[in-house]
Image (cartoon, rainbow, N blue to C red; front, side, top):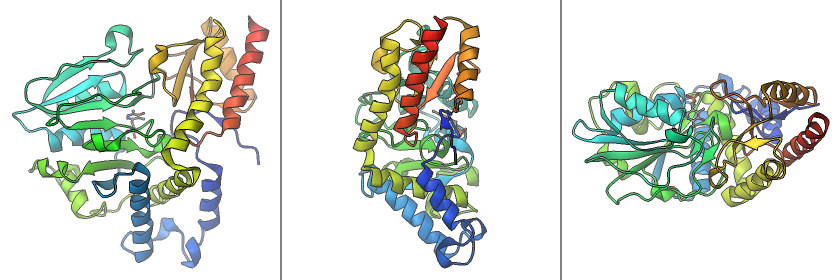
Length: 360
Ligand SMILES: *Cc1c(COP(=O)(O)O)cnc(C)c1O
C-alpha cells in the first residue's frame, strides 16, 4: 500500500489506523451483522456510536458537561446563517472580526439574514496577512464572532481575544478544531466542519454552552433552529450517520495520542519543518506575519508563478499531493492537519531544499 503525503486543505488526510478500523468493521460492525451505513439511526447500536462520539469530544475539550454537542449537516457554511438566526435578536448587533475568506462569508450571512451587523476589526487593509490585535464592539452586541484559523490565508489566533463578561464569544474553528488546547470555557458557541481536522466531509460539529441556550430565539424554521436539534440529541431527522461514526474514531485517536497538549506539540514540530525553510532562504516566502502563522495551513510563494507550477507538479510526482494554493490567492499551500504524519512534513522539507538547489 502506498499512500501519498496528503497536504489537502480539506477534505483532508485521516489517520491510517482509523481507516483500517473502519475497513475492518465496514461490512459487519462488531458482530451486529450489518454495516454502520445500513443501521437505523434509531437503533441502540447507533445510539451507542453517537453517544460515544459526543462523550469523547467532551472529554477532549475538558469542559465536562458545560456544552451540548450537535452533529449537523449543511457544512460550516450553514452555521454562518444558523448562528445569527438563532442568537442575534432584532434589537442587537452581530459583531465579527474579519480575517478573510471564511469570516467574510460568515458576516455576509448575518447581513443577508436581515440582522444588524458590525465589523469589529478587520485585517483587510493588509490582505488578511495578520490577526487584528484589538477590536471595537458596536452598541448592543449580540455576540463577537471570530474565525480561529484562516484556512486560505494561513493566519491563526495564538491568544483568544478577551471579551466583556456580557458578550458571548463564538467561533468558527473548522480548520484548527482540536489541534491545540484553547480555553474552551471562554466560548459560548463553537462550530467546525469535520473534514479539516476530525473526520470526513458531511458532518459539522456544533458546541453550545448550556447557559447560552437560554438566549436562543424562537420562530425559526425547524431545520435551522438549534433547539430542534438540541431537543432531539441531533436525531430530529436522519443525521449523517457514517461521518459521525468516523469522527468518533478520530476523536479516540486524538485521545489516545495524548489529547490536545500532545497534539499541539506534534503540530508545532510539523509546522517547523516548513517555517524553518522560510526563515533560512528567500526562495520560499511565507505570506503572513511570523507571529500569526498558522500551524495548520501554510501558504507560501516561490520567485515566479512558473516555478510554483513546476514545484507543485514535481511534488506530485514525488507523491506529495495538494500543494496548490487556494484559487482565490494562488501560490502554494501546505495543510498540516492533526492526522498528517510527521514523515510527510519531513518529506516536504527535504523536497523543498532539493527543489531550491536545482532551481535557484
Ligand atoms: C472549510 C471551511 C469552512 C466551510 O466549510 P464547509 O463545511 O465546506 O461549509 C468554513 N470555515 C472555515 C474556517 C473553513 O476552513
